[in-house]
Image (tube, rainbow, N blue to C red; front, top):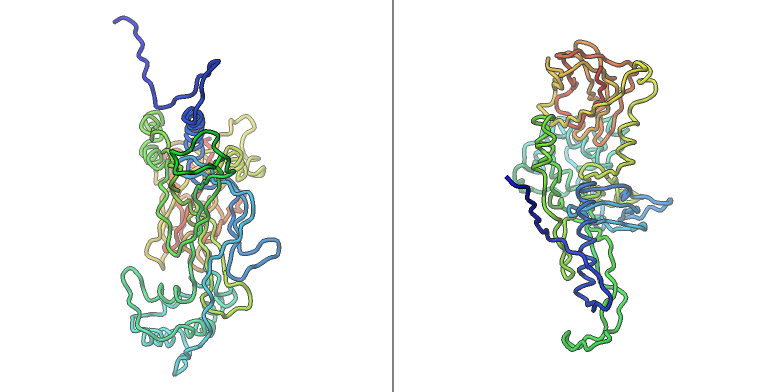
Length: 457
């Protein structure tokens, strides 16, 4: 076969200039479209979707605490099409409704125990309600910032129901319509704590009007036109979650999970085309979640209605190079590296293990390796981020199931949602090829993500 070449054009065109060329609006728009398309393509494939840095949502800034609002601090994120969500100034955003007046509906007779209060709640609202459901309400109100930790501890440790009883008495007696999977405990929490979702979306609009030198009769008598495209960010709030932002790397991750050796083949199937071209007349694009804000519905506190802002539960992350280098290096402390041989090439391996909640109440073991460790390694470090918490629960890495074997980490707390618990054990667990590694949950009802750093030995 003779050598041959095939040239295939793509959709990208850039201007070629020559002396005496007549440049029109169409030419200049094509010049910008070329650079925008390539920049957004590179940003989409480099960062993905989510926060690069900043954009913290907080109820307080510079000692200012507005009663019904939160602050969104400056920062940068990327939307699914590689467009920058750049916020350069602090913005105050209204997130809470006007507080409801406090008009207690006192239980009669007054319940004196958890079981009596659970029975009174069931009778008042016409639905099944148990002590376990009451425990769940207390835990959720604590996680959302309405119930102080001291009151939560008094409830669980001393069976003190005074605070939770006072909260429930704020809700007027009624028979709520509970559509599965909504439960009575969900409804009670919703009556006490409002939820607002905060997100960001790319926005642009015309700016700096300038007169048209040539006849603009074709445009309905308009004499001036926007001479600039002003980019910005639309900060959005909603009482319900925003539509899911598709993880751009989920297909690649699933492919690599099936066989990490197939990187080349997985990349060959990962092309997603050019980012969509946005219309200059219609604001389009996905809303990237930033935070869930919890606020009190009743006027029962002299401070701000805003109770807490959870910045990490739903926010997608798209860290840049410096952040990734810091993430890779920070968990491996000098103390842990001291045990490694000086002549060993240090190449840490990171394992990320998301866990869903199982039936709560009993401990269980989640296998990381169950007699199938692919090579000998040492556990360097680990941390645990809780998404579903249970009071007093912990997780721990061990070399055998049932709580046996050797510990690969200290017990890490799973008692508070969004809590990042760090391994404080300075000893490094060695695992042989074909060995095992388990995550021991003291309560199978907790959920979250385990991150383990290993070093091949």
